[in-house]
Length: 109
Image 1: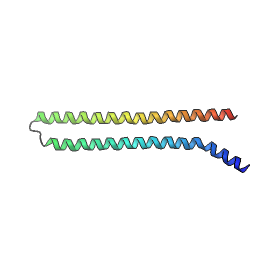
Image 2: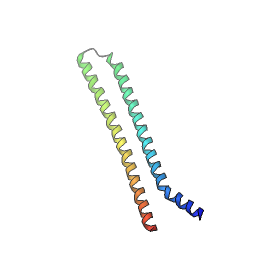
Image 3: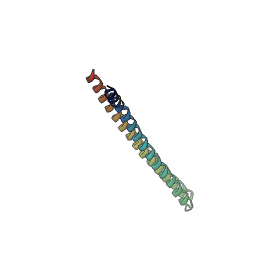
Image 4: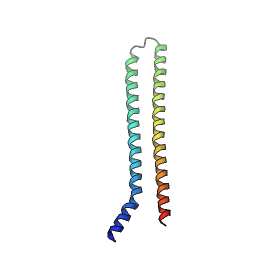
């Protein structure tokens, strides 16, 4: 009887473990994306600083600033797309888990 209760408790906790695993993967992905984005932004800023010294005219400076802004925009857009994909994937996995858990619960009833 005790073994049956233990097994039932373990089985009932499985969806929660799966949920934690999904959330952990999502957070790992988001963290990795943010670190990559931060690194790219820092590298772009360092490149911008180095290039500033080569500017001879105000037009050069404006063109450099425009290129810098465009590069940052592309980096941030790419990071946003990666983050949205990670969130969407996690949501989809959670929905499947919830649906599966509900189906199992209703089948037992």
